[in-house]
Length: 143
Picture (cartoon, rainbow, N blue to C red):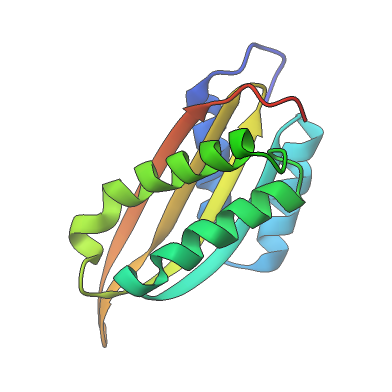
């Protein structure tokens, strides 16, 4: 990733690349690479009926971010993750409402930039639409 100042778009690319992984092995390889570049990352697989999984999706993302040290176990850390998840969900909700959804949600952080990326498929039976969403928060959280 070079030796330059990182921007929100750099952290966004890391989060989206992680969300795009198709296996746990690929995810772990990328997480190690990103860690060596100074990024903190986590990812969570999800699936179910869009409306009914939203509370669990948010909860699991917050827990993953806290367990991996991306944010602290405080209202500051939790609020940043929740806000970023909500922004990412906003980008996919029109395609996902009333449908089944499955995919991966990834969290990346470097410095004050926190990004959540969602990548997945939405649909019924064999008709699936690809969806992607991303949300950013600037967070000052001493971890």
